[in-house]
Length: 128
Image (cartoon, rainbow, N blue to C red):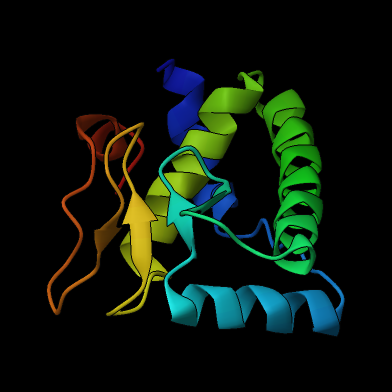
């Protein structure tokens, strides 16, 4: 990661990508069911088979996240992937609740326990 990515860490927490209430309810229910989780790349992922409504809600939210990451990357002179990854690190560290699933890289889905998630090494360079 480039040095400019470290400056993104301070702003990444401000990237709030909303979705309509229904879509958010669908995503929240899927997270509770263990079929949707956060990923270290900054996007939501799907574990297994889900309904069309869940898939659409996840796809729609990921499109909004990509738009936000694109704007953030342009402001900071970074790549979209790096801006997304910095936000992914912060999301894994602060927003994944006990019992929810998450995935680091292309690894297996894991369930968050009572302690903190073991973050990838690049998260430390991003200020996490």
